Each structure stands twice: as structure tokens, then as C-alpha cells.
Amino acid sequence: MKVFTDAVRAGDLEGAKKAYAASRIGWERTEPVAESFGDIDPKVDVREDGLERPGPGEGLDRLAPPGEGALAGQEDHPREKQLADALDADLADWVKRVGKAEITPTSMANGAKELLDEVATGKVTGEEERYSHTDLVDFKANVEGAQKSFDLLKPVASKNDPKLVADLDKRFAALNALLDEYRQDKTGYDFTPYDKVGKEQRKELSDGVNALAEPLSKLAAAVVK
Image (cartoon, rainbow, N blue to C red; front, side, top):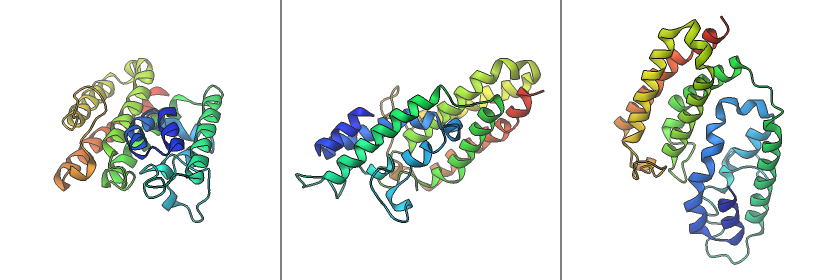
């Protein structure tokens, strides 16, 4: 994240654009339990056009495309510097809250399922990253976050519902394989820009997420039996 906010403070538009997608990966992985951290999620992850009265200090997405129109061609950019400082402060606050958050097996399981529902019905449209078109980076990080929740709950779920666990293993593998088709570097997070992904391909991604979300909805019950 610091690479991104440092670039914004420096007025380095190209550097900020390059760092933007990677800066979101850690945050997107935590989405299954984001509500456990109180008001940090809406403070960090709101877009400027989603605010009724935009003001300084709200949001990672407010700097996407990072500084475009605000940093480009300007020697001084106090508003963007202020946003970058506020983002660093909010994320430092988030780190402090992580160890104090109340996260239960049920909230983890339900959060993972709700996140995939959001991906399948909202994020897959491209509206969330409408400026940067780095949606597939977010998708991958979201799936990784949901899978991490599943992996943490797997020892208990395996005892209570081994068939469900086997099904989830298969469906996570299938969705990851589908996302891998859009990787441009094969191992990292350089994915095809989402504005280059066609309507049928987007439907295929949505179907893949839905195919995973359905059995994932049963995970909460499998860990409280």
C-alpha cells in the first residue's frame, strides 16, 4: 500500500496506476470478515462517486484511477496528498483492530459466501473497478480470501460433512483454473484488463462463482453441528 500512497503524494500518476491493483490485494482478501473491523471497510473502500458530499479522507477507491484528472499535469495536488495520508492512517488503524476483532466460524463462513454473491451479482459487471479495469485482480483476491476462510474451517467441516468439503475443494479448484486463464504472467497478479473481457466470458465467470457459492452456503451449518 505504501508504494501506492507514496506515488500519489509524489504526484506520480503512472507509478500510482501501476501500484493500485497490487495495493488492493490484501484488503480484498479480508472481505469475508471485513464487517468485523467496524467502520474501516466503508472508510477505506468507498469511491468518490459513491459519496453524496465528497470530502477528503475517505477511501482507497477514491484514488482510482489514482489521481487521474487531479494529478495529471499538476505540480501541486494537496487534496490527493491528504487522501493518501488519510488512507495510510485508516489502514494503520485497521491493523490495530485485527487482533481485537471478534470473528466466529459462522461469521467467517457466511462472510465468504456473501462475498462470492457480491462478486457474482455486482463485481462481475465491472462497476467496482470501472476506472482501473483491474476487476480480475480483485476477483482473485476475493476468491483467495473465501478459500482461506474455508481452509481454516476445513478440519471441523471435514468431520461433520466430508462430502461438502470434497465438493468445495473441487469447485474452488475449478474457479481458480478459470481465473488463471486470464493471467498474463501465469503466477502473479497481472490479469487481463476487465474492459477486454467479453459479455460471454463475464457470464462464465459469474457462473463459476455461483457454482462455488451454492455449496459454500452450507459451510456455516457444517461447522456448528
